[in-house]
Length: 162
Image (tube, rainbow, N blue to C red; front, side, top):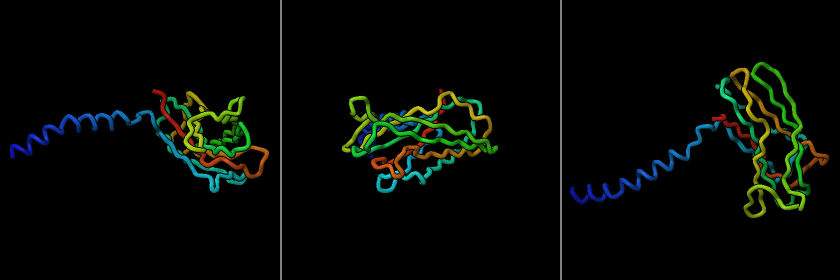
């Protein structure tokens, strides 16, 4: 019995550190994040991505981000999007958003791994949602190409401002 207790007591500091790392990794500002894979990494103009988000906190301000993952074969340096937000009471807000995926020299921006580059673009800051309920976010590509190659994932993230 004493041997078992000694072995367990030697592991308690390790378990405490592991537990604190897990708890410290929790993001209290996180409200929503979802990324959708684009089939064959070719985003068709007809493919409108929908993200229904339940908002319960109407007092706290939020930041809204758009996640884009592109491949090395993306033929352009930027990406235009139409973003439409429909509130629970039926109001629509539509924006045109430009995301820069490469710098002036042609070097890809963001974090890269292999031939894939990930970016998170701040879409709106300090947003207070006026009513609680389901907000529908629609993202569609607004480029001149009907089928846009090299976009593998598109997503949405919403965080509370602490």
